[in-house]
Image 1 (cartoon, helix red, strand yellow):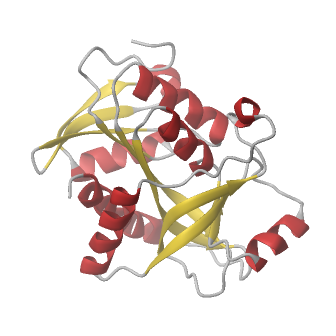
Image 2 (image 1 turned 90 degrees about the horizontal axis):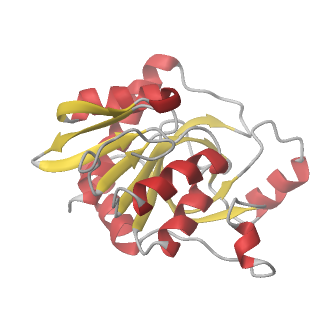
Length: 234
């Protein structure tokens, strides 16, 4: 048991899927895992452990933003032995060829700052995905016929960002999409010598202002979870 995770010893699997929304963690666990057991509800952050195709898996919420994710990922790796961590979440598309319901596999994650920034001082650390997970996720997505994009994303620490110039530069430099957690996840995985990947579903588009309706989100998010699970155990 840690400050933020009430699970006991052995309750957390080595493979952890990380949706931001704790209720999405509940949905994913009940839909994809056999015999899911609630292992955490401290501060309403839900976590469940069960099995998928015979493999132990934990689905645990991470909250919104890098500071929140940093708390849970640090404790999951340091205190519970998590070694493979895959973020499953929504993202906002930036490029015109990236459409609603597409899957984005984040190869790298740019950011203005992260909770780990002070460690590096003047160094601009380049956080990236685990190659094996990235490759396996690409194979899984292709097998199922999901429209998929692989490349750099932007992890923002501001949801209501009023800096249009940053968006313009992200688009100019080929950034596929924006979300709020991956840069810190990849940095922490590098520090703890673990594997990490973000598998993201496009829920809205920053240029067209399109958005997924709630019923479409659930169907599309299921694709993302399947890709994450197959990548973890390929």
